[in-house]
Image (cartoon, rainbow, N blue to C red):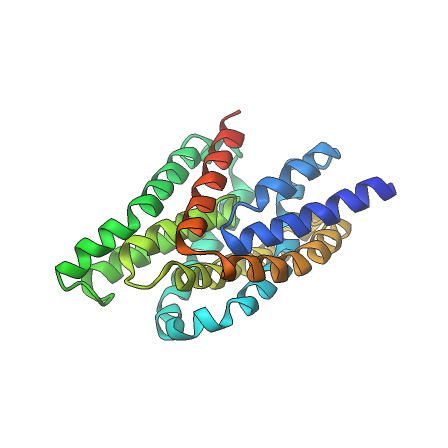
Length: 253
């Protein structure tokens, strides 16, 4: 690797770690960077997922205060992320990348719509005494978390937007707490997928890429947590929408 390539991958990892902590979609920074330098797509995707685990750890740590009230709920949701991630990671190893390309932009668009309409839907839910996550709402959320985990294990770009969109509608919590929950579930997905890749096909892992992305995303997660926690709900929501729209454009071009 040249010094330019090393620096570019570290910076991409830092940027991705920060974006993942604030919103999600950090893979849309690191993955194209790795492709630009000529790395095979599947190897780049797998190595990137491994490297971004470091940013997930620091991002979740940075949101620990917002996560604390949701610990019992996250214990119920995390298994769905775990199972979904295993499924998605295995699909990545056996299916062509074109398998999910058609549906991914649609999923992101739906998630953005949920993020925008989340406050109104939550207000409607509050008027109908839906101030807890039980019964049918919990089942719907678990199914949504499962499919988001499958997508995250397969590719991961804009997984955070999908998670925030669903939880904005189905949970009565504020956006910052939801963002903290998103960081935990995203970490579960990335870590699980990384372990699957290591066990099933470790030859696809480029450890140099893993190390550089991990180094950058570690500090990016800390930076992203500091920035994200200072954002007002409307600014955070607007940031989610902008990044989500960019994700759709990038994936469609």
